[in-house]
Image (cartoon, one colour):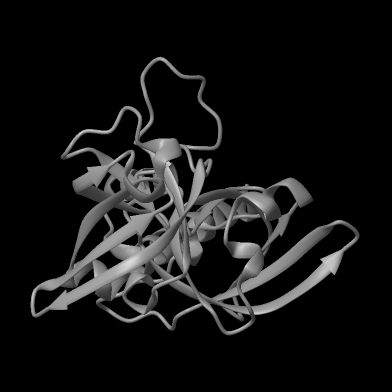
Length: 236
């Protein structure tokens, strides 16, 4: 489990690709390796990855992770290049104060930056989600203004959602801009998205309680309930 509060920015120092995926080496990471063990989980740009090798002292500290093809397909990590910076967060300890929100670091999909502009010291960003498909359902039902979303592993508050355009917006204060990579990404760049897992559980529970399945089934059932209520009110 993670919080979405980025601890450190690491740098891609090596990428070794083969048919099954690739090995990523992330350098300049000594700051988060003091309590590291082989097999530990570290969220890398919002994707939970397993440490396969590390050194706290060599060359400023580095660790390696394996990216399976599934991870490369679902995230932006397959597009990273040597020299790119990555958002890093260690798994949350049971003894620490909880900030951010509940983050699994299981990326639900990607979005593209379609607008960015300064607002005083802050930076406003708008993202567009991919067209939904049967294999890739829409993430919009889980996005609400002032709700949570994880972008490249960073827990952020939604400032706006436009279902018609498949877009949502966030605002980065100056402190956040300095701590994560998102402020450096340009329009057209891809980002990793994880929606609030509590919203996913609520939707599934409601759909099960109403006897429906999927977004369309849930929507039709809710519409039927609303129509029945209105009909009863009109006749009373």
